[in-house]
Image (cartoon, rainbow, N blue to C red):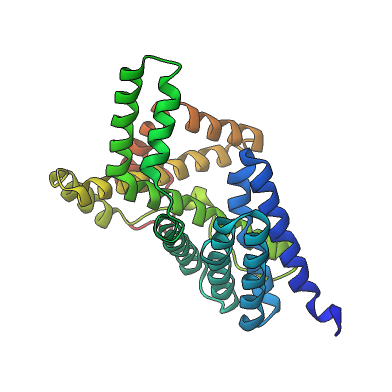
Length: 294
C-alpha cells in the first residue's frame, strides 16, 4: 500500500482528532475549534473524490467516538463533517461566492438542528434535568427561592426563543466557517473567489422591512416572535457592516477593529445602536455603495 496516496486523508484525520482533543481538554477554546473543525474536510474535498472523503469522516467519527465519547463521534458525522463536506463540494463545483456563503449558513443550521434533536433522542440528554441540577447547585450558595425563580424565568425565555437563537448562532458560525475555509484554500494556492468583505455587505431592504412590520404586528405568535429576533439580527449585521466600512475607510488597525468587536460583545447597548444604524442604512445608504439598490 502506497501511503503517499493516503497522505492527505491521514493528515486530515490527524488534524480533526487534534482539534477534538483541544475541544475536549481545553473547553474555553471550544468556539475557536468549532470554527476550525470543518476546514480540513473542506480542503480534503478539493483533493480527493467524495467516496474517500466520506470514508475519512466515518473513520474519524469512529476514532473520536472511541477516544472522546459518543457525542464527539456524532459531532464528527452530522456536525463539522457534514458542514465541511457541503462547503467543500459547493466550492469545488465553482458555485458563486454568495451562493456558497448562503449554502454554508444553511448547512450549519441543518447540522446544529440535527445535533440538538439527536442528542436529545439518541443520546438521551435531558436538558431540563441538567438545568434543574444547575439551579439546585447555585441555590445552595445564594437564596434558594429567588435564584430558582430567576433561573427558571431565564430558562423559559430561552426555550421560547430557542429557534431564533439557534438560527442566529448557526448564521454566525456558517459565515465564519465559509471565510476561514476560503482563506485557508487560498493560502494553499487554490484560486478561490472570495465573497465581498463584510464592510460592503447589504441586505434587501424591502423584504426585510416588510417582514419586520408584519412580525411586529403578529408578535404574540411564537413563530413571529422568533422571526422578529432573527430579522433584527439581520439589521444588526447591516449596522455592523456600516461600522466596519467606516473603520476601513479610516485605515483603522486590526487591533481597533478587534476592540470594537469586544465592546459589541460586552456592552449590550452597542448591538442596539447597530440595529438602528442597520435599519436606517436600508433606506439612507450611509456608505453610498455603487451596487446597493436605489
